[in-house]
Length: 95
Image (cartoon, rainbow, N blue to C red):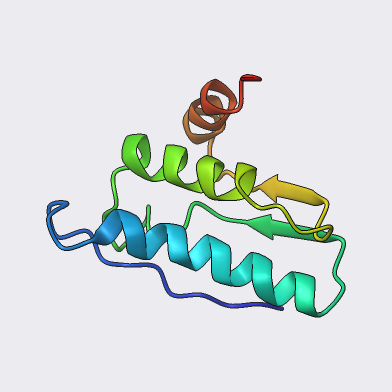
């Protein structure tokens, strides 16, 4: 298991977006260094930390899309409800 603590949303002026992207990238780096082929992410910081999903989800999707290492080669975004899943689907539309 890989664990990361996402940033607390403080209004968007405290580098929260960069910190959140760094959480995803660090997890991907750890997974790659361990030779893991698959990884699953919750909506990091979108719960009690208050990060607005409409801002967090594009950050998560961009971080994964920019990942260029061979592994992991399969990423799952775990969603706690259908509304969150729909937000991810919208961001995951092919470029």
